[in-house]
Length: 105
Image (cartoon, rainbow, N blue to C red; front, side, top):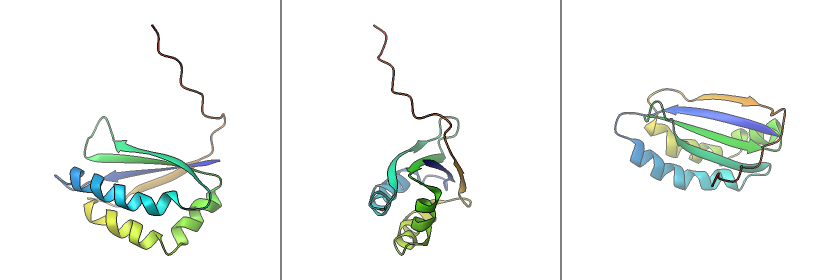
């Protein structure tokens, strides 16, 4: 498994429209071979930055999405909201995701 992390710095006052665009654009992502899941939301320290974490079965699966015809409309929906080029990196977890602990009573 490979995790792709993307960080997006948004233009001023575009968070609501970016979240709307994300809901539509994410449909392109979730249908791709090798896609395992994702998490998305604003960064706690800077609400004008959003972080996207995508689990892929391999880096090749992510690369295939970047080269697929669906990537262009996916990016086209999101790009107008960016104040800067997105940051992107990948990592391979050394341990599997730990199950969430039960809340303490």
